[in-house]
Amino acid sequence: QMPVPAVITDLAVAAATNSPAGTEAVTTSTGPDEYFRAHAAIVRRLHAKGADVASAATVDLGAINDGSYVKITGTTTITSFGTIAAGVERTLLFADALTLTHDVTKIILPGGVNIVTAAEDVAVFVSEGAGLWRCKSYQRKAVPPSVPLDASVVTAKIADGAVTTVKVADDAVTYAKIQNVSATDKVLGRVSAGAGDIEEIACTPFARTVLDDADAPAARATLGGEPTLLTTLTTAALATSVEFTGLDTATHKGYRIEIDYKNGTATAHSLSMYVNGLTTATDYYQEAIYADGTTVGALRANNAFILSANASDLSYAVINFMQVPGGYAMANSICARSPGAPIVYLQYAWSKSTAVANVTSINFTADVADGIGIGTTIRIYRKDK
Image 1 (cartoon, rainbow, N blue to C red):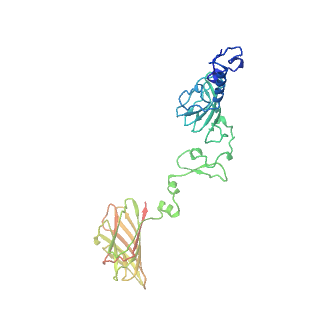
Image 2: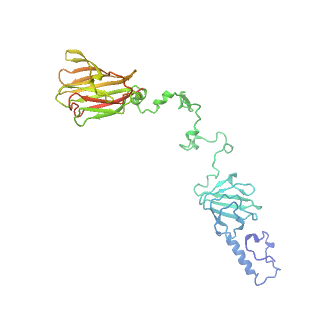
Image 3: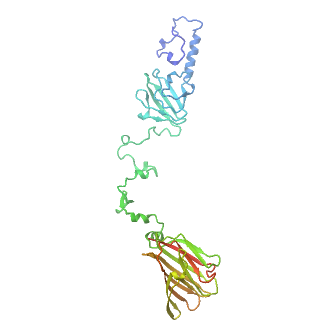
């Protein structure tokens, strides 16, 4: 006589093999009601949730007898589901990310590749006996069912020319996938007429220096054709002298200096330019030519004059400053005075009488107290070598 069954594997597929048979004697403890209840419990467990099971290398699904719907917790890689008779099914709910290992002798997965689970993924496995389980279905929580589990693109899975432009999402092709550039100093674009494939355009280190310039003035500054504004000073109070530091003629080709000069006094005077704090006037040379109305003349003196102002006028000067070979600081100043009649034009040639290693500062000093008036603006532009 067959004992009262406890789990589904205690039952035989052939009905005649199950107990109790009509000829079998039954007792109170093994009466028909015990079999009825046992069969009912087994049927109910097919539609019940079992206890949660922690992931492990082997998760024995055949040993789970309290329900066919089971939550798998943890992140340990699973390589086996144990052994049970063929045809037994288990529905698994994954609580965490773990790897299901494809193995044709233990776990057969869709596409023949491993699956990395995600929380709330659901899979149905059926036993094929001898320790082999097959995944009947796998449902991703975050991916539509129509998307295959193995969505990787490999040569063996796609026919040549099968992927058309419409199938490629916008911005999906990364820069790394466009082309391997053959060498340094290549720009990708087209030189051939009309539309077509990307081509390599020869570039040079020199050309690269202007590629990131925002506009024509920036490009001219890079090429040395236009100076770069270094600093601007506008006086808010009367001053006798102002100084600019942070210069470096060892690095820069020179400086262009623009002066909008306001006479701070009612006295005609001159403005001198000194370098590196060396303010002894006789250490400088100055030559000048001038045009004052119909009078034209020339001046020469052992001083540092660079601009001349009348008693009540405004003056403007443009100074090109440089340090020539041998270390001599030299400058050329074009100066105009206005308003009034006549307008006076002066051009100064200015130099330091002895060489200096590097000009790091420039000082402008009026030869009368408070000669530099309020609103005087001085701009210094850097000329790069």
